[in-house]
Length: 346
Image (tube, rainbow, N blue to C red; front, side):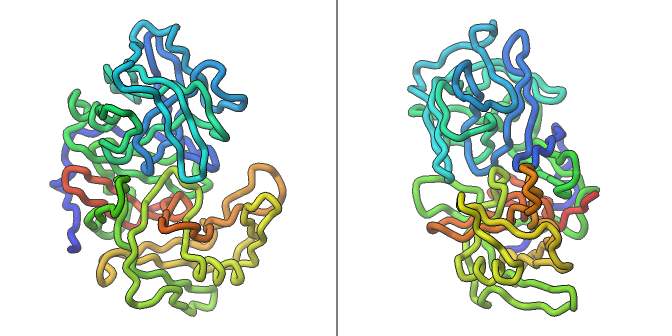
């Protein structure tokens, strides 16, 4: 069912936080422990664990390392078992749990449970997982970060909205507990969170259409009219994952090349045009994504860009930052909805 988020729904206590754009990740800066140790974490709506690099846990740690022995407010949580989790790209992290005081923007939260890594595999940033509560890796379930903010009165709803802005922008914004109506155009349309079919809760909505409009204003449908597929809206993914047949059609259109390391690249000067993604029946809401947003600059300086799409490898479909930069997204856990609108970009 299509519903719009009215202005009166979002007049509540909230916490806006700037998210620095680190090219392939959007970061949140936390002060952890007493005295505070400043750590930058990647914001990930596709997972639920919060963890930080511990001493000697990696060889290429970005964003800082947290040393619990230097904090008077860090307490080991032996009851939760060992900390161990893995991600869709087969990266892994292991360690132990602590509870600790955390400050984000102007808010200080006590008793936050997080993992301290002792070993990582190919992970370059600590991660703030803000997916479903109850999907954490611990043997005994605990409050997630959003629930801590809510229970300690920092926010008045289990929700947050995300505006990543254009890929050239220095930062995006997350608002815990609220919405900024100046950041989007049109209605903010609510869609039900699609129930997951396995044991892993996911923040997913129903994807129903995709078309391409080229520089001559010719529109080509890329999906069948009966498409109805769950898609995960995941800030932890740089790219969007599409069914193989659609990916292959786009790869041919844009002149995509697969490098020896498996990465898909595209010339940085893409043609004019845009995609239109539809969600919900009808569709209930459409989001336009300019072609320019799917050529992600290569920070390695090769002169080519990372292609903003990847082919589907299993049953899951993710829409990551290459899509999300064009959408304003409001995740409302109280209502079990995700709301979408066309983002205004700078």
